[in-house]
Image (cartoon, rainbow, N blue to C red):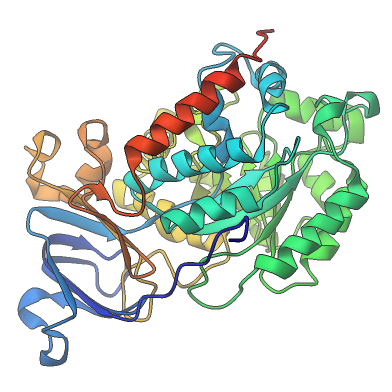
Length: 467
């Protein structure tokens, strides 16, 4: 078997999900539907409506699932992650970004391909069980035998729709960067491997389960030459997008001023990253001119509220960004700076954090940012809402538990207002495949993954030297 595993076959059977207590399609024409039904053929939604209106042609299917006492929404889309980081949670607990990184680099440089595979698998489990059906990942460190195939195999094993990015660090401390030299690679090799991965794995077709991105890690650990070369390479291949960290905190801004004599807005123009095939993580510290620049250029943002709070980075001006027409999605970020990968909780944090600033964000708008917003950031028009012709990606939670008691009048909003007490998803369908049913993961043994992951984490964390 290939190190990247095998792509999952596309389902060919029909599926009818009916008797849904409340379906939030997040489609402007369909809206919310009570006692709803969804008819799927293969991996595509063919019909959506009330259960009492199911056409005769769709009244029976090869598989039927009844979902009373459930709220169902489109699958959530995660736009920023470092899945390997779930091996090193709770480190440097009171530090800001650069000191936190200095602590984490110690164990990370000892990682192997086996570490990447098991950490990706656990991170994906956490995402799937919290409502995510499509995720990006930013793997930017390649010590020992690590390669991107290790995380691709995990996604294929579990059935997650995946946007892996070939990250990179090329500028270590000896060249003025922030990372240890031992964690960096030569740029010629980085670019060669980026092209190899695009040629081998990138699938731009509609309903694709795997699309590649290129992601030099950050302005403080790669050269401007690599940023320019990655952009040139990506634009030679349809649908390959560009990703990096930007304007994460004031220290990040200060580094740009000192090193490049400019702010982020000028930096991205210099390296050719001011286009609509680019999305940046964080952007907590944009000024008004940069907000306008992002909107005009069509640049996207992965908003990572929990990580930004944990590392004292600041609050991204999401309300202002959305009002100015900037594409915004939600990212859980790495599970060493979050320190969780609970996708629904991250959407809730985004909603609440904008209220802290006095600007506000309604629950349904937050859900749209976490679904359609993420889809737009990743360059997709086939996920993010439930409607005929869209990918069969949707998730459901039980509504007969403690958290929903008292919120039956608006179960959709309750998904975010009452999140802390909710259990895992009751149902997850990804690309027409049933991945979770009755709250149980069908594509792996959760206990076995946790046990194996714990062993790898304990071994890796033995290399930690707190700063």
